[in-house]
Length: 125
Image 1 (cartoon, rainbow, N blue to C red):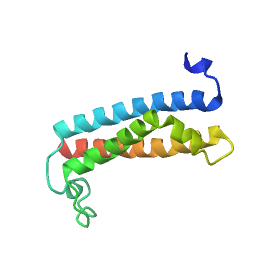
Image 2: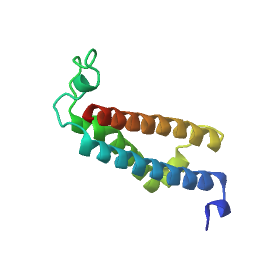
Image 3: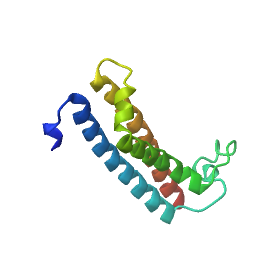
Image 4: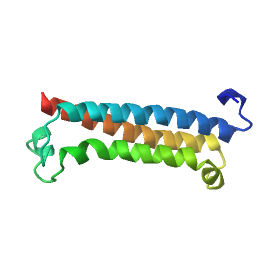
């Protein structure tokens, strides 16, 4: 059965969202791993990225690069294996609105992940 041949809206939207979130997870990990290859491995990378404001919070290169891709991967695995639980936990009457809200949150985390990787890349060059 293809995505277009799904029985109901939830199944169709779930399959589409799972596919797109999987692509975002892959791109996020690929960018983070590329940045990890070039970024300086220091105890506080925030001080290198923003010398004026980076001294208040200490964050290592590993946590700076890999926390958000790990959150995305955990969300994708939960989405992939928890379809029945998500169907039962529906809070809004419109399924499309729920998936749109989830897509906004996922895109925000994806954007922050890519932004952090690019900032670490610039710190490395």
